[in-house]
Image (cartoon, rainbow, N blue to C red; front, side, top):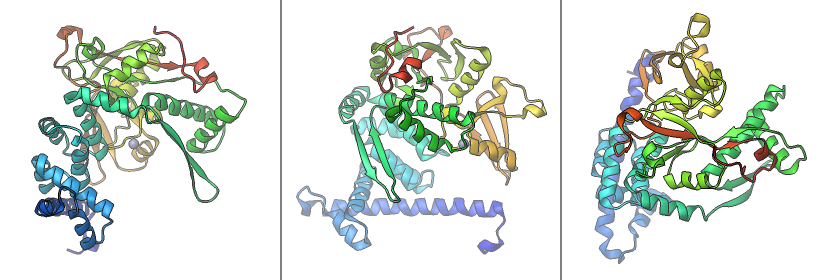
Length: 418
Ligand SMILES: [Zn+2]
């Protein structure tokens, strides 16, 4: 059947078939590259010149060839199940390459543990979700190594200036995520306020303007932002080294949190999570109830609940799954985070959304396909937890960067822990 004759469901089915076929061919390429490299090893006295031969043969750049040969060798040597998953079309080349790249820092045994956990998780997940899962699993299996790598990385902070065409330029800041996330949120909050005050510019433009005002301007806007970090109770008590999660960034070592805590910048807030599933049960309420409900939903979903969308809760809206106008209540079980794009899509198209239980979403596409979105547990299910089951594992949200912080930005707020 020609492409022109295909219906939308047939086109989607054909796209799936093409992806599976491409993955099968990519797996064959991986095996060919690894075999070629193995046959050339003796000649090269330990140096990899096999990739140069491949580069010349296929008109790839030597850098690209070296990367692909390296990944192919790592995959066939240490990650045989990943190659098989690629062969069957469970993964594509990009996803399987990410597994090889992330596990490179681990020894063979630990790489195998991480590979098994990630392959179980990977079907139907995006590259971004697989990256986050890899980061979490590596933090679990190798907390000491992860902390050593972090200690090394924090010494490499910098600001770079890059000229761009048309009279523009970029300023790149490379710093700790727990410093930059609140900075970014602060710019977003300032942009929202400007928007609410009637400024017609885009949020992106207004963020840039807010940064300009903060660095070069005399006017200091008073903006409150909050960095959310969740951590399993056992890790908080020092009884485990399970990873924490910086919202809007991803998994991090538990020492990141301890450093923040001792810096005196932290306001502790309790989130109670189910120790078996990691789902959010309750959030310590410091503010008005309606505010707390929205916050609960943002904390629970963390990002837009459309399949694979990574727009963070902080950059999204709270949506009534069943429209308020159609009798949908303002309650946890009927609220979810949607970015502006997917919010508009839900209203403008025949996509349908249901929430069979709080935090679980079922999307039905215009062609009738259903997609299930079950957010990752907020904290890793806590097998080593020292808390009794009834007490549940707790997590915290912290770090108010309040008025004084904004006034003295970028110096961190120095208020004590509450
Ligand atoms: Zn979205």
